[in-house]
Image (cartoon, rainbow, N blue to C red; front, side, top):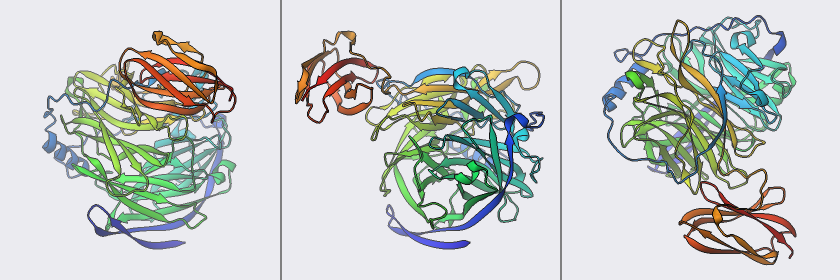
Length: 626
């Protein structure tokens, strides 16, 4: 079934009429196979890496980008500016643990991605390998397999190269979905979608192959992004023409809307809907990034985002919404919004010893939707000193002109790139997140950083997740690959905890490429997470007193502060569940008195907790007897 639909959108910012377009087609594909990890064929972990780097003198779009960046920045035009977007007054995320992930396989970029289940099963993927871990013994993989060995040998693309794996965990079904591409030419290209039958990644997986060239022309599928709704998984790809680069050979972006229950049960057929010819104002929208729920999956709708990623400077973003499941006559709506700041092409990042890291463009690299807001991140330029920076955008509903808040995370000495973001809030309206990204500079080796974001407090200074140990020098010339992905996921049943996977520079032993990009996996926690056990404490001699206690209808707290500071006052029940944030604002130095009515509370025991951006100042028990 094919539909040709045309909608009219009022572009608020310039008061002109812009036409939207798309087409849809239903696809039913047969199951390739069901495999069990322990029965896979002998694994040789094969991998082929192109050693070609883009030349500024070439005709490809990558060459155009290099010429454009040379024109804009000259790679040496750093200003001596003291501007910082982040703030040392906001608490940093807590780094809980970390360990080396998938081994270097001679491939660049590593394309890191990660998923963790509620029971602590971890799947980490890079461009050609899958590693599986148990959180309890996380530094040692319990299983390793290449994409080649994982792929059904009966597939028509059995011997095409396998690349760009993406892994996703379903918190409601407690299962995994793995997506990767097979083949990089129009005559051999598939989108392989794999579903775990249970929550054990070492068990059975059901594999399906969607057509990578659905129009039977000279295009193939590249650059997959994956997100889930309650009942479906959405996979976006770019169709690229043969014998061209992903920059210059772009044909169009597709959305695959896939039924999850078919895959989990190992049905003989997989039902899906393909969205194509997605455009606005006569131009195709490229690099669509779907937005999964922050604290869980939602549905039936799915939001996606894109932007003008090759623009030297721009402030517009595209927000797309598929409003229903594939079985319920879904439609697609496209809204254009403008941000309060501009984003744009970043220069290539500097390494120690003069080598550069490729930043590509400013497309949206990740995001989530929560509390009726979309949070998204991507690469950009620091306008104050022409270094690489990352942006964090927030889209509030309804989507209208000038409704997008855009902030830049940037530094005077470091280049930041390839971010991703995960939600760390604990309750409705709790707007906080951890943003992970890569860093480098002419004085340091490439490593991994993270910042904490909270709506009222802002952004923390970066915390170093993993320091680089060497430069990256795999390709000939002075331009190395830095991305293209950064993996991060909330652990859904642990409030405030995320797991991430990025890369760092490390010198490897032996011959070959001695200075390579290695994978690093780490868990981090929000500094604003509700503690597991809240006890009555009075740290730092704040002289806190709660009276009357027991409380009848009203109670008060007196306490002392050494300095004027931002504080939160919250009340928890005896099981450490947050009941209410009572106060969130500035408190003055010296003595303070805070009071509140207790009649909304049921009789029983509670904990009153006061904290600032850095620490818990004190907790006090309260008995309510209204």
